[in-house]
Amino acid sequence: MTAFEKLDRFLRNLYDTAFYFAVMAVKENFRDYIRRAGPQGDPTDEIVLLANGPSLREDLPELIARGEHLHKDFLAVNYFAEDEHFTTVRPKYYVLSDPTFFRRCCDWERVQRLYATLNERVAWPMTLYVQYYNPERFDYRAALPNPQIRIVPFHSQVYRGFPSLEFFCYRHGWGNGNFGTVIQNGEFIALHLGYRTLHLYGVDHTFFDGFCVDDRNRACMRRTYFYDAAPELKPLLLTSVNPPQPYTVHSYLAEKCELFRGHEVLARYAKHLGARIINHTRGSLIDAYERA
Image (cartoon, rainbow, N blue to C red; front, top):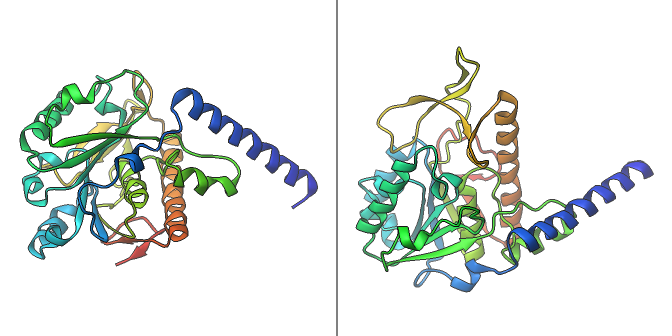
């Protein structure tokens, strides 16, 4: 590396680091809500994280048949509460991170049904993690008055800057693996709570199966989640902006590249902590973790 390249890298890292801390100071804060709240009840040594991939249709009944939910803690995400196995698994932790869960747009009626389902079905102590960033000031407690549900915010600002400071920020709960999918937030939360073995299911990450451009030049995906009865072709919308904007092919692929980079970051962070992340999902596109 030439002297110019070294200087360029240093200046870029300096700017990115300063920008990160400025954003945290203005947009969020430096409180470690996850560690303050602590784990739910008496944590086990291992935790099972359930993502949304279609493989979970087969894997979840097998997990239940083996009694995994009886001696391991579980973490679920998004619309898992609508599944028939929800009250059997009784996850200790639940994570919502997509802006659609606090922004009245897109599938807002379905989001409201999810909150109603959580209120009705959660009859055990459960911690719900939601993004601290909430520009619409959505009141999660008003939507979820169920006293069994503890609501804990987490920071989602992605760290960029000097590599030597990255894990320092993660250890303090200031940033996490929010690189594009809710399960990465779940992984970070589990690591931050002190779990040392994370078992991943449903992380198919087959983001390119059924990806196409329709006759109106819209980037579309034939989405398949484990809780969906049948795949449905839908235009892809970027929900991190308000109002949501259509993806272009370039922006979609760029986001997925960042997402897979996020798994590499989380794999390095887990190793730094002396923890293991084990991917049990058959056919998963993730290559960053140990395979079962």
